[in-house]
Length: 143
Image 1: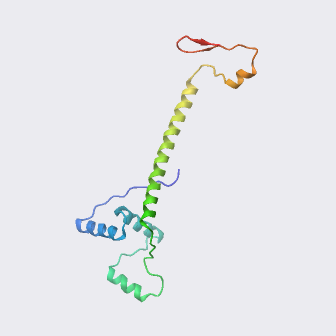
Image 2: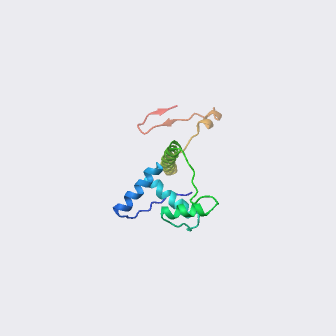
Image 3: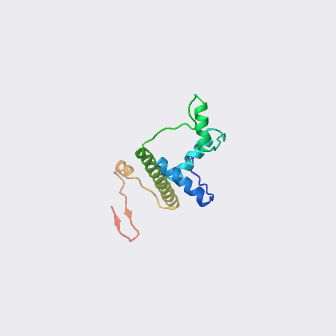
């Protein structure tokens, strides 16, 4: 069926929460995006991610002539918001599709359960010699 997002929840103390919130504000993203970024980085590097204090990170950056770690890419806030909006819209469309599938299934089951003879209108055009009476539950019939 495809990838489905899963929810992870855990508790942190107030100080850690405030620090995480500051990081999110600094990066101008949502708090949940901070966690998604961390998880994405962790998965991308096969769990080989190490959290180091900022002062040590600066030292690591100056010691290496290679690319800085972690690699950074600046993305406009509007892009992030649009991406989040599209994710919500896609989820809504998936829900609507599921509802339509359930309704089609319901109609098919109802059609199969109906024992009355089904006459297709295009078949009526071919058989002009034979008159067909159509009736309804209230006793009214049509010719």
